[in-house]
Image (cartoon, rainbow, N blue to C red; front, side, top):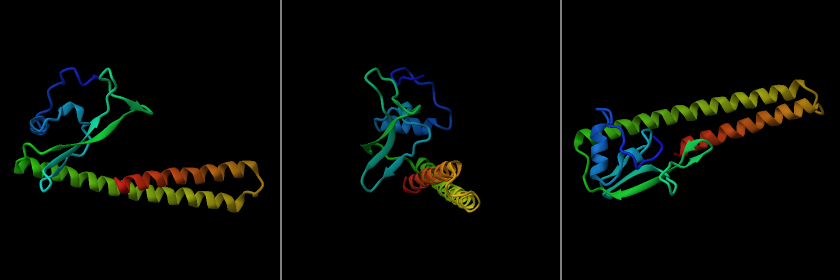
Length: 155
């Protein structure tokens, strides 16, 4: 299903309490990606989620093949009960652990790429065209991984 105007399939039993609560707060549950965090700020009385970005035909917009999303904040009309709030906190903690793991893996990968580039520089003559392409490619790959690392650390 590409459009959000169609009736969504019924959520799995485990997701129903979250879907019902989102709907009670004026958010269409199938407009929220399953992976998206749900942030409840009880002090401010707000609920923040990510929603799919739709085009004028109601289709999910894509960028580089991936669905586009945007943050969306609404007043907290119906606060979550204690069980739901505990579940949302557990999910947020799990996402934080995964994010930390991703940052750690990216840092190790970047270090390995840079070490390989330095090893190549040590054995291949500097004027060699293959050397230049390889080392530049490795350094570029390290910068890409660094961007992943920074994005994961900051999100």
